[in-house]
Length: 220
Image (cartoon, rainbow, N blue to C red; front, side, top):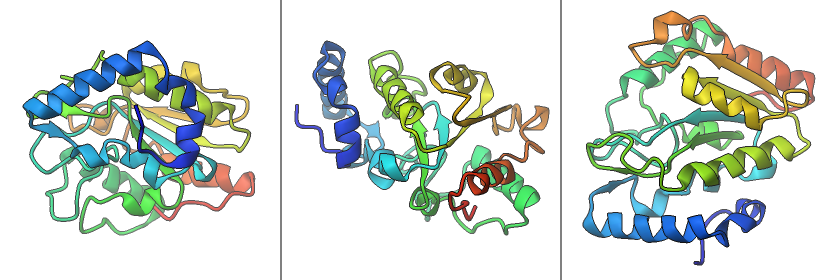
């Protein structure tokens, strides 16, 4: 299969394209889009990688699943298109950014500006059936995205891995904590944000780490 993805990521994940699980995943996803609807649009499945080449990645934020409502998912975790109502988890993320950094709360939920600064906004599962959260979990995406996390960890440039919620926290096993900064807290979901997400100071802590390692901080 000819995978259309940003060249540095295509090279870093080259071994994955040849594995049996990826062939099975490709067949499954093709059939799901044929039956449809599936989100994000097929051309944006690898949008997180395309927006943030591996050598440019400074911060990694992990999500679990794309949004499953019409028009929401744009291939970047937690992000939505400018015209889409900001989801509640992202509202809470913006509240923490504002409280932590003093930045104003944005008018829309498009996080492309973060990605262009070196923030990889990666969902573990890159597609989802409409209105069925988790419907594409367990079909191979997690193996691919785990390989991406491992590739980021192996890359020598110091990075910040932001892991919100117990599920994301388990991905720390893939990350070399002696080289990179791992930040964990509760998830920004309205169900859990008050139990440790608010006040985690992840955005200023990430920038301090980048500054300490001679990397340009993120304008959150």
